[in-house]
Length: 395
Image (tube, rainbow, N blue to C red; front, side):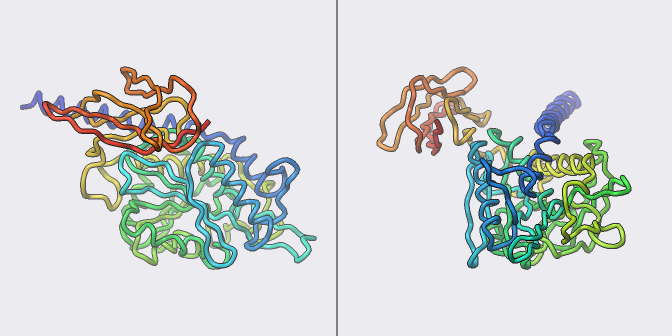
């Protein structure tokens, strides 16, 4: 009995180490230069495409529309699917999605991309660097390092619009998460730390499992040796997008710099909110902290906030990346054996592929971009079953 218990503990330890290693490996891909370049593009210091330079991110302006298009181009470049949610007369949310092995539960991270301030004729431009190009850049960087990977649960990345008008973007989409949200992490202003005190405020309240989530965020900072000083704020400030989730008793926290009081960023909602005021190391550390927390929650399936039903790995089959180009991985429950797999088009015609020993289905001849299906036959004992997964081929 002791031997079996020891073996069981060793297996659990190995699984836990593998989970932590994947989080660390993914987060290591976050690049400070990439973060800074993105902030420069969002604040008009660099063009977003060709010669196009943003001169505003205020709701209803051309610059706001161009910002949304910039985010969509980035997601498309990385092969990440997204939904566009239009609301009101001018609002546009963008929700990037990386399906997990389990699609009924979602870990969500988000930031608002709109900003305040500009004169009528744009004589004066409010860069909105800390508020909230910093959060937007961090969420975009999280998408980039997570693209083409799969995790136990689905990951979603929200780019909210019209936060500055009263959380209108997050309020327009929050009902979509009523029955699938495990946890939401909000990033709004993460680059101001003038005294190098490295304080990371964790805003929480009694909504859902938000207090438990905040406590877990602090433990994650310690577990991964994040060089920040997390401080729980309870009750937290509801005047940013996590507040929309709290209104519906959902589990959410905000990770941000010192939000109120004498140490708050004095450049907030002013012409001087520019990249030149950033504490660049703090910005980088906060970006890593947020993504580490986000991925740890997705990987540590035994303690997902608010999830207490079926185990994540009960699904028989997952396929990724999706969209794919030439190779797609079949992730099969260990209780089943793959006996065959084929790729078919919308007409049911089989596309030539090769299935290797690593459960990778590889295109052997070029095929047109579009929607296809993978039919996989699984065997367990003497019984077999065929599952179909929809996939998208990108050229």
